Image (cartoon, rainbow, N blue to C red; front, side, top):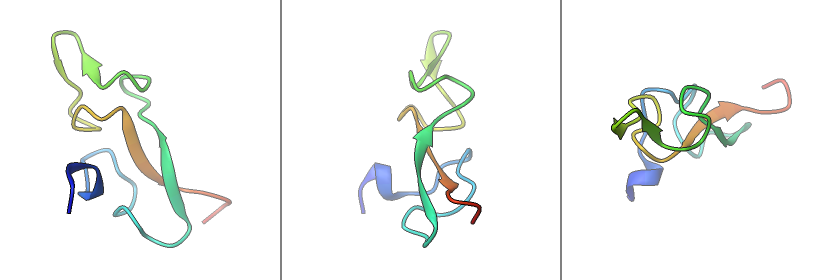
Length: 55
């Protein structure tokens, strides 16, 4: 399992869950950074897992 496969605090569902996909983190707007550190919602990846298509 890679770091991008692990659930992050900002994920609405665990990665790989049916009906979900990656989206840009709303807190850091996809940069992965908040001020001088890693974004706590996306763990510095800039991406979170969210439901898609009304899932």
